[in-house]
Length: 337
Image 1 (cartoon, one colour):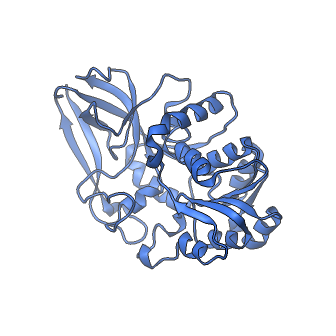
Image 2: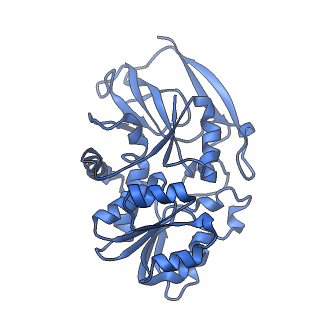
């Protein structure tokens, strides 16, 4: 066997938006497998907002990527070589092992997840049926605790997490308001996904438009953005409201995140305070199959719509991350290797 693995290694920590010199391209040959090892040829690489935080040195919910290590990220691919009784050649596998074109690993590695046989496209297992979809499912159900008839607002509503949050909430009988940037994204959220309304935060009337869309206040706010969006939502939160904090992408490029206003600063000043907390989808890792099964069935029955931005070429991964951080992508951002 003779394969050439191409990797993006973290070469320096960024200050602000990560530029190309933050990474170093590395190539290494793979010529053999040990017992119980497999080799995965990566087909798709997921690009997600959380990656920016992993480039920082400071403490977070997950350890930072070390200088000289592959950039953190999830991939999905096909087993091309196997010395394993668990995975055979041809199996499709998700692996959270970073930005690289081949993955050599032990078959017992806990970051491996076999993709079930399905009519759903393989790329979807990095988005709607993958980590973003599971994040939406558990954040909404376990932190948001939705009840029929309530009003839910979700920011970044056209993104990989927001699209699933809103559609699940609609299926549970909630009134759903999305927040997105620009007429095209708002039209998609309202007309194609079936949200009750979508507020364009770029239109310049965010506070007034949100108030108009939520005359009965907000019972659940699914937080993805932070900044001015959180400040606009805060006065509308009803007593007993819940705020699952998935992220706050508007602040990810701050030069000092610890000196930056976060949703916790805004929400913590309210009286009464909403029930709010940051969550990570791995809290419910033993229940991932439940979320995958429910979301897969909704996709197969055409009851859940998703959108992907698929960019061809591994070399385009750094720019794709910048596009995600600035909202240029539409739906789930994926690199096709």
